[in-house]
Structure formats: structure tokens, C-alpha cells
Length: 169
Image: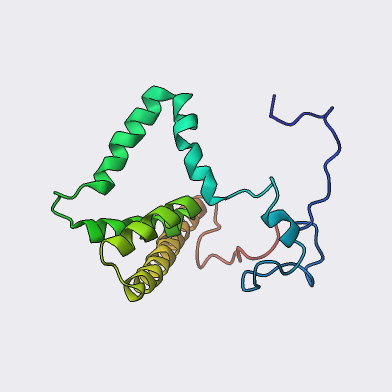
């Protein structure tokens, strides 16, 4: 079973995903603008700050795993480590940006502020994170280039052998 029930009710149109792109809500629009406004207070909001309160009830359904996660989380919350707490929070913000975890961003930007991190440091962290993440793309491009070359060996399709990999096969 894939989790999709073919006998369930028909899928209702999504006012955000199915909206005309010209009228879709953009990230810079104020709350209440556009077709998503009706969803913001409805039960179908996916990421909501109140969901953080559900962590303990979800954890109660997997107590051993939740206890292990809580113990692991304490590494971030340590005050006595070689890495000061404010740096731990900046690192956590950077990771949350990369993983795109809204809850992590909420928790760790609040903790960063409590530990003296400035708005300027958060902004610089965001741009450093974006740059390092882009570097990962370049690193994988280098790997792809090498693998492409390796796949050409023996098949006559390597670099400089007259095969343009951009052409349809």
C-alpha cells in the first residue's frame, strides 16, 4: 500500500497550488492578500507555531526514540561546551536554513536573540549559509563532470571524442 487510497473522496482543488500563477500569493505579499489568505487561519495550514506544542504527544507514541532525540538536542543547548551558546544558535540557524525547518528557525532565532545574537549576525549567517550551500552544488558539479568522463571510457563518448552530451540520444 502506498498510502494513497483510490476509493477516497475526490481531491478538492487547492486554492494556492491550483491558482492562476498571475494571481498566486507571493512571499512578499502581506498576510491576508491573495487566495491563500483563507487557508492561513484554517485547519489545513501545514507549518504552524502551535504545532511545536505537539512534540511531547508525538514523542509519547515513540518514547525511546523521543528520549534519544531529546538527549541529542541537549548538545545544542549546552552552556559548558567549547563552542559558546550564541555560536551554537547561529550554527543551528544555519542548519535550519539549509533544511528549511520553520520550527527550527523559530526556536533557534529566538534562542539566538536571547543569547545576544544581533539581526546583522543572523543576516550574515543566512548569506554565508547560502554561499556554502551553493558551494555544495559546485562540488557535485565537479563530481558529475568526473563521472561523465569516466562513463565515456570504453564507450567512445568521453570528452573530446565528438559526442555532445547536450544532444538528444
